[in-house]
Amino acid sequence: MAVGCLIKGGATMSNTLEGFLARNKLYNAPRACLMLVGAISSAMSKEPAPKLKLNKNGDIMSMLSTAETPTENLIWPVRCLIKMAVVRQCLPSVILMLNATIPNELRWRAPKGQGLASSPRPSLGLFLELVDIILESTEEATRLFLNMMDEESGPNPYWFSISDDTKLALSLVSIHGKHVMLEEPEVRSWCLGRLAEEIESPTDSAYNDGDGPLLSDGWLKEVVTGALCNAECNIGLGLDAMLMKKSASQMSPSNGPEIACYRKDMLNVQELLIPHKHSCGLDFDLIISSLLILARRGCDWREGTQVSTQTLLNTVCGMAGRKTNTEPKFVFDSATVMRQCALSDNLQSAAFLIGGKKGLILECADLVVSNLAITVKDAELALFMGSLIELKGSVISIYGGISAPKESVFMPQYYHHHLLWLLEEHVLNVRIYGDFDSTSRMNPVYAGRICFRAWYCLTHPSTRRRSAEWLEGWMRQKLQLTRGESPMRLACAALVRTLLWADEAEGLDLSDSNEEPLLAAVIGFGGQFMAELAQACCGLIQSIPPHLAEEVMSSFGSSNMVSFEASLINSAQ
Image (cartoon, rainbow, N blue to C red):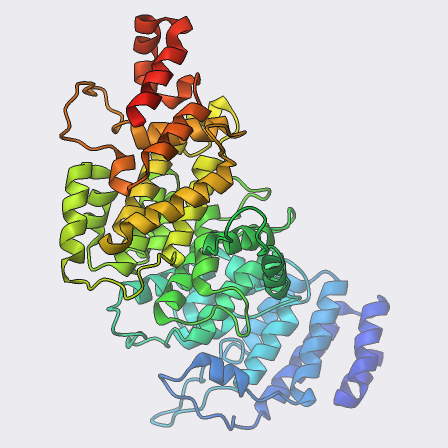
């Protein structure tokens, strides 16, 4: 009796009814459900036609922003019914009743017309409000909602009974700060399929012209933000502004010229991408696919952000597949994502996705390809596949049609700074003997050869001597090298092996043949500098290739190792 009287009071008494249903357990729940469902059916039958005119190829984000807010007369019975269902623990049955009563409103679709007449679709605002009320009731409500069956279309489960524009809108629903739909398998699978179609489309077609709704920039940004919020990352809370302030405060030079490199921003961004240990983890597939499209379009991943789309993409790719404090809910499909990086012509993301030696090659190849008119294949040949003689010939042909810079003074560009960061990270930061044979750290000799070759490729022949002098001065400062002495002996040993020894191979020829030059001579380093480097690491077996160490030890004896190093110094002088 009390419930019936309060229902008759309509929207005016809805708050009182909601409180009564939540606190009182003496009423008959099934009968109250039937009365509320009747009220819902009556309210929906009086729903006015929506004023928003839908365009088949319209942007779903603009539709969401202009969606009309439904009146309280339409919403209050649904809110009261869901409230009662949670308190009386009958939510599954209530959702089934709603599915039978207002199936079209829950799917944002037009009801079947009679004869030739067609009916308009329900209000988009009403659809979104109904979804919000149901999904925010309990954690299991999302799964119960998607389990609804639709007799009109099949029967089919809910997700397969709605149109593409409805799916686009529904995938962005945020409940308590989380995009809960993106965590459901069928929703995520559909989103990944649409993203794959967009990536595989021709690059000159920024948008998909298919039958489904367009993948707008706004939708892609929401997917990225939603995936970050689901992982409860700090960057999803808008803390990237604080990140850039931190990065700027660290730009005061302490030892040598300051190195400006996007790798520094990546390290700071990585701190903000650590997922909460009780979250679902980062969905790398969704984030990377969306960022690849945004990067190709030249769009920011969020309005007003301080972190570029490419930097965020590089950082996420660097974390993908690696061990984190939170196990992701979905298995990362590395093969598919790698293919998407290739289709998007995004060498940077592919480099960080691969990691290791191959990743370093691609990272340096991206610098070379971005600034010289050569292909990726030619860049890889110059960086690690070809001999130094072939490298010199390639560089001569590349710069044949490029005029020399007007200023004779060498000024390092952003790509030089990037190579300096790599040298400092992988070569100059060697601290222990195990770094030369570590499986968890980049081999310093390998990294040094790739970086110095890239430096040679990116330096105009007219400024090569001055660039070598500048680089020599920078390394002296970093190594604190003075008169053949340095506190960083292992780093000096790595540089000696890189610059004074030919590429390591099983069949290394130690004859006096002058056909293959040394890397130090190709770069243009002075003999005095190389002699001091060799003197600083004199006595360290790490300064020669490992496959020759045993032969040298057996030939000269351990007591004569210093004599061998001394001969190396004399040859450099």
